[in-house]
Image 1 (cartoon, rainbow, N blue to C red):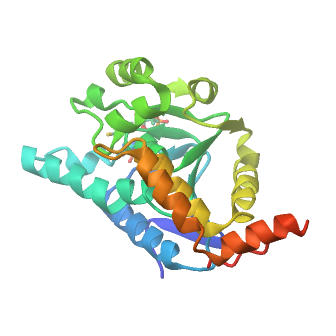
Image 2: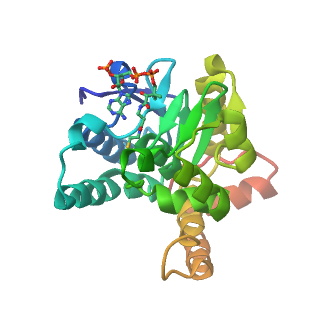
Length: 260
Ligand code: COA
């Protein structure tokens, strides 16, 4: 499938999705959100793909936010709908995907761009990356999950300060806050991220999906994460990969997981 605003490459079970509007610093217009949503749904079904890496085109930006030119004249109803559709079709969808999605932040990750990175399961940044939620400087608040995911990741006080000041933080500060797991030179960003992806690929896919679900349950309203963990743990015992993993350990050999 061809897309106007993203590029997909698949290599050794890792799909790299590159948001490709460098002239607009990869700002998320509706068409790009649609492309991303369709592509991630297809990659989720593709058995050749075990991990997805999300990055931006060019050396300057991961994503510099939602496309301001598209919503500048929106009404209350249109604004509400914009946020609700984005949550459902892309941001929440990524967060709840069974396959890990890693954000490789190669430059500015602002507004919807940082929200997209935060919807991913974890983040790696290049040294030049800058992150922020500048929406209040536009008379808005973050609308793609930023007010919820940022405090989950860095704590309420730091999130309040970042959102209320609209200020950007450096990659190093983001690492110190726990917003990104690693900071690496820009030229090494994708290779470094791909090495982490391959560490994940060695493990049982069903178990990886259930681990994501159980961890996410800790942050969901009305959910008891411990219950989700117990049920998910139990379900793993019904898989061939569980038998293979434990047998391989006892036979002192490497497990060959099939995803069954
Ligand atoms: N929406 C739409 N267009 C955007 C954009 C966004 N979020 N961010 C950048 N662009 C566009 C600019 O309008 C410009 O387009 P043009 O060349 O047609 O005028 C192009 O991308 C390059 O951006 P520019 O501002 O010239 O680059 P810069 O290096 O001077 O500044 C930023 C970089 C990231 C600081 C600046 O682009 C910016 O503040 N962007 C908006 C960030 C934001 O508020 N995001 C949250 C949106 S909710």
